[in-house]
Structures are given as C-alpha cells and as structure tokens.
Image (cartoon, rainbow, N blue to C red; front, top):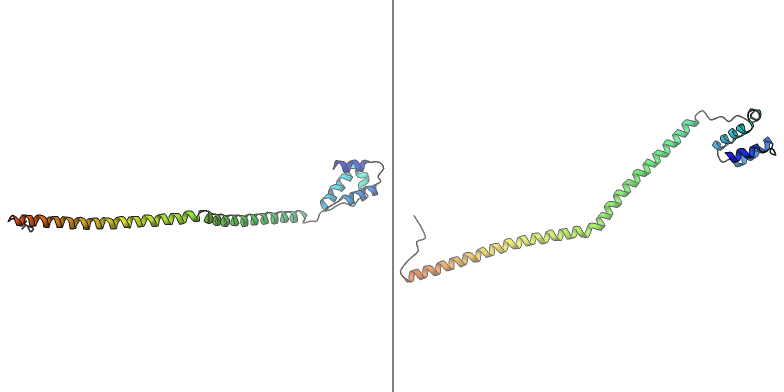
Length: 157
C-alpha cells in the first residue's frame, strides 16, 4: 500500500490519472476497495466527492462465509479420502511385505504338527515293541521254569 500511496501523492498526477493507474493495477474487487481507501487517505475528503462510494453487496459476508465453509468441507472430504487410501495402501503393503513370513509361519506350524504326530506314532511303536519284548521274555522265563518243573501262576483268585 505504501508504494501506491507514494505514487498517489506525487504532484505530477491528476485525479483522473490516479484513477487510471488504480484501475489498471487492480486484480479483484477487494483490491478496488483497498485502492479507493488509499486514494481517500492520500487526498482526504476534498477528493472523495469525485469518486463513487464502493458498496458491498448485502450478502457479501454471508457469501464469503459460505465459500470458506465449502472450502473447509472440500478439504475435510479430501482428508477423509486420503485416510482411506492410506489404510488400503498400508494393508496391501503389509500383505506384500509379510506374506512370506505368514507362509513361513504356516509351514512352521505344519512342520510342528507333523513332528508331534511323528513323535506320537514313534511312542506307540516303541510301546508295542516293548510289550512284545516283555511278552517274549516272559514266555522264555516260563519255558525255562517249565523245563525245571515249575510254573507261573497268572490268575490270582
């Protein structure tokens, strides 16, 4: 604002030239209001009679608030969408990254299960062979005792 005000104070510009410069530098309605306030500040009330008073629309502030609310709603929607994409991407990357580990875990549990089954089967076979060994030894003792004329009483009443 200060460089524009300095230009406006320059004595070589007439009011029409100042307005021409002001309108050529404008980019929005808000800047027009700023420019007019700078002109009023530079020249005071003696110059303001030639300028038309800038009036705001009656719903200007309401429209600005609606625009701001729409902007925030769009930002919130975008944030929600990005969170959803983040969750999906995280899940997918986790599946790719830890897929081998899950397969390895399954294979380890399969191997553990197989080892437990093998151990149980080995115990059953050992018990069976041990039982057969005990029965064979018992028969051998009974035969040896029978050769001496003795017998083993199996049923106790």
